[in-house]
Structures are given as structure tokens and as C-alpha cells.
Image (cartoon, rainbow, N blue to C red; front, side):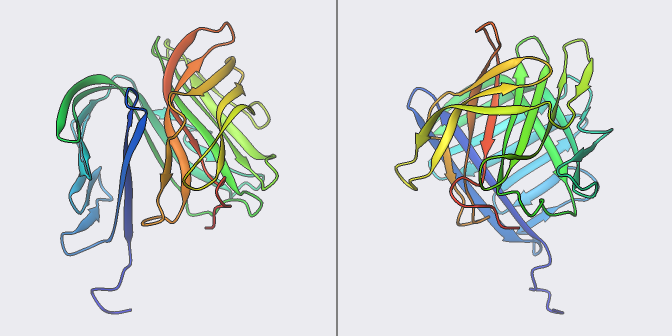
Length: 276
């Protein structure tokens, strides 16, 4: 379409805060077509604007400003470690065919400061963050119905990534991940080295979807327990991407039963198989 109003690029974003004490997930979403000053994403650096939300970088520092319904985030992130290249020097396989891959890097252990707002109250925060950047021109394997993924900042400075793509019967189509130690030693997991085993599930009262919210995750680094901090961290994004999925704050426990870190668990394709 020749019209300047034709949507050639669509930008969407989701934002959420896990209120641990209140046992509630606050979340919101945005979607817009690129152009007219409403939405844009630079291809040269990280400069993203989506209506009233923005994410930008300058000199190794990222700034996020996301006012939302009943909550908001205004945060700064500073790099403390080198970029972690996932897969084979940044090319991460996502299926049995070689073309099923994505370019993928992470920046764990970002030093974070700023403020969160919930229902008019403001809270100053300091902590750690994790940035993932992944892109591809390939669709998922046709048998893949969804995925399970974790990104964990360990308290000693290490970083753990693990994922699996599932078919409709819950079997692994592909798996992978990495572990980078506090001494900057990187081990990239090979196919078959990561196993997700569900331990406890939770059923959403809103969508009636059942999610495994506690896992035993076997990796070459250790056998871990991944446990959701609160059960209900389901996101309904039917107003933007169309998907219903679970993504939220979780803790990481090692094989000795010691809590060693925290991060995010993401699970897609449980409400219905992903369509791409």
C-alpha cells in the first residue's frame, strides 16, 4: 500500500510489576504502527518510543520510562558485565533445522536504580536487572506450540539461561541455554542437556489455563528448582500480541536447597498454541 498511513512496522510492548506483598501482578500493554511521532524503533541504537513509553541507551546506560494504568516504572540500568552471546557466538539454535535460529545476546547483572509507582504511591528501588535482545527471520518449528524459558541473575554474579520449545504434548522440540560464572567462564548448553520437569501447577481463575509454576530444571551447571514468587503472574495480551502467557518473578534454588538467585520464568502456549 502506498499510503503513508499503511502499517509497515508494528511495535508492541508489555510492562509489569510483581507486587510480592500484595500478591498481585500489575500489567499493561501498548501497540502502535510506526510513524507520525507515535512510535519508532531505531535500527542504529536502542531508541524506542511507543506512545507514552520509551526505552533508550546512552554510554552504557539504559533508561526506561513506562507510565501505565495504576502503576509505572522509571528506571536506569548500568552495565556491570560484558555482553553474553547466547548459542554459537550469538547465533542460538531454536529447532532441528539449521535455519531455525535467532541472533541472541543477554546483558545480565545490570545495576538498577529508579522508582516504581503503584496506585499513586512511589517506591525508590535499587537492584539488578536482565536485558535480552533476540531477533530472527525464521518462524518456530511447525511442531512447536510454545516455550518455557528462564533468565536468572545469581547472587554471586553468575548468569543462567535455559529454555525448551514444546510440542502440543509437552515434549521438547528443542532445548538450550548457557551458564556464565562469576569468573566470566561461559558454558553453552548443547541439545538434550536441559530438561524441564514440572513440580507444581496453578490454574488461572481468569482463563482456566493451567501453568507449571514450580520446575526442576536440569542443566550442566546444576539441578535447579525454579519457583514462582507468587502464583498469579499471567498476562493477557489479547489487546496487543493476541497471546495469553505467564511471565513473572521467580527464585532459583540449587541442588543443595539453597536460594542462589532470582529472575524471570516465562511460559507460552499453555492457553492455546502460539500462531506465527
